[in-house]
Image (tube, rainbow, N blue to C red; front, side, top):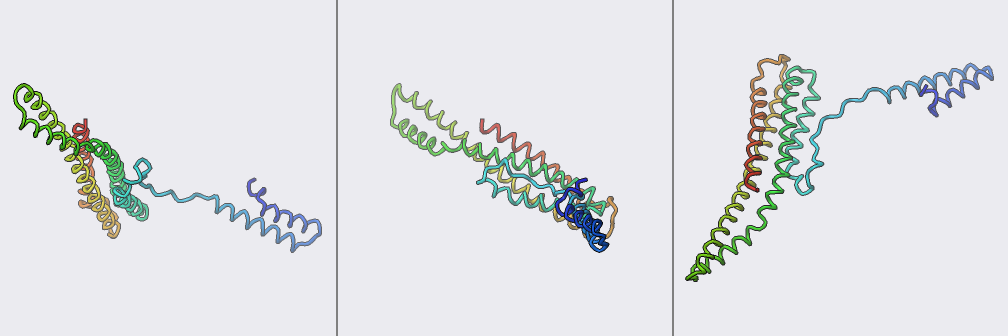
Length: 237
C-alpha cells in the first residue's frame, strides 16, 4: 500500500490510467514500467540496513578529559570494525567477539577511572596552602617555649597528617594514569592479535592461543582496575 501512495508512484499510475482511457498501449506500458521501477527503488531503500558498529561513548566524560580517552576509544572502535569486517571467520567472530566484549568493559572502566581522577584532583587543590601552613607552624614551634609550644606541636602534627592525605591523593593520580596506559597497551595488543587471526587462512577456532592469552590479559586488567579504584576511593575520603 505504501508504494501506491508515493508521489512518484502516483504519477506512474496516472500515466497508466491515461494510457487506458486513450487506448494508448505505449503510454500504459510507460506508466506500468515507471510504477515497477518506483516500487523496486522504494523496496531497496526500505530494506534491511547493516547493523551499526558498536562504539565507545564518551558522553559521560568532560570535554577536557576526552583527549585522554581518545586513544582507548579509537582502539575499541577499531577492534569492533575488524570483528565486523571478518565475521565470516569463526575465530574472529567467536574469539574476536569475546575480545571486543572485554575491550568494551575495559573502555567503560577506564571512563569510570578518569571520572574518579577528577575527584582526586579536587582533593589535592589545597596541598600548596597546607604546606605553607606547616612551614609556618614549624617556624613558630622552633621559636616557641612554655605552654604555647604544646599547642603548636598539635598544629604541626595536624598539618603533617593533612599533607600525607594529599600525598596519597597524588599517588592515586599516578596510579590512575598508569592504569589508563595499561588499558591502551592491552587494547592495542588485542587489535593486533585480531588482525593476525583475520589474516590467517584457517577457520578453526581452536589453536589461537595468542588471542586467547590477550583475552585473559584484558580480563585480568579488570581486576587491576577494580583494585586501583578501591584504593583511590580510600585515599580521597
